[in-house]
Length: 50
Image (tube, rainbow, N blue to C red):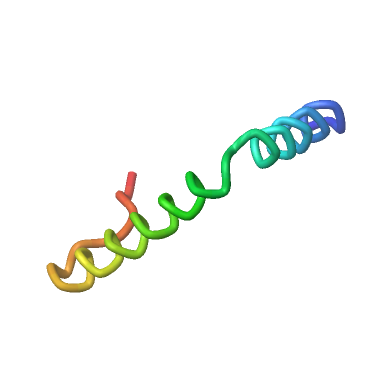
């Protein structure tokens, strides 16, 4: 992979961070914790294997 695609990806990630409201990020974090607890309690993997 060349430098240009990596640079574009880093720029896109930086823009996403800037335009995503803090409360959205907090909600994502809380939802992930709920998902982790559910997976632990049911014995399911957190991420789907493909």
